[in-house]
Length: 299
Image (cartoon, rainbow, N blue to C red):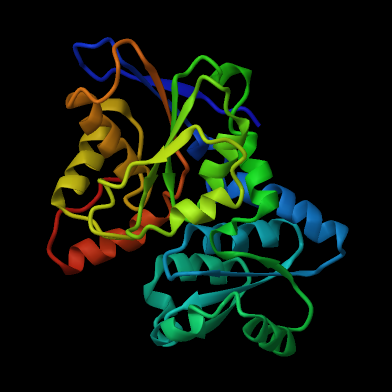
């Protein structure tokens, strides 16, 4: 699936050109990298004649929402193992969980301590005893098949760019970009969370060494946000007509604009930033911002 590439006119004295690949426009509910990651996993689940998809995620997970909708669309039952036992009685206050439930997903809420054991064989066997046979999709959707799907983000049209940039959560999207990139291209990943574990995770899938992580723009960690980022999101939408999600893409573009302003790129380079979607998370973030009496994200 080809997606539009849109130029962003960032003023700078080095003739640097910035473009955005609008993966967010793929589908209103299965947008961006979630479409890419689920594509071949769905094919495999169908090949194995599975009837149920089971996956993991947090309360505002784009992946949880996309899996629920995709499952319903393709005739699968869906189960979401959700981090945070206390959310069991608060589903109706969470826009992501309301959406997933509306699309047929059943939930299994676990404590954060138990959730950390999600890859443990004993934990997975307990899930099979509880729910029966299912096709397992990892947290964030990242596995070999997800990486294969993300490789398709790049094509002949993107070969002219010097830098390919993406936000990073579980490492699947950047791994696909690395594998599909040209030798002259540098892949930059902007982690949305703190921690040095991503290097190791990406190395499990990446087949080239032409990449680096920019760790200065996570804003304190996963789902952390402040008034500066909210202002950036609102100004970006007003100026360019592009809605950014506060968890991932906004942090990457904030970083890129800052790096360009600070002269961290060579003269005349062409930069392509991948918009990975995730706009469903804005509703939940605005509830948090409202509770803290902070400015809201314009939608």
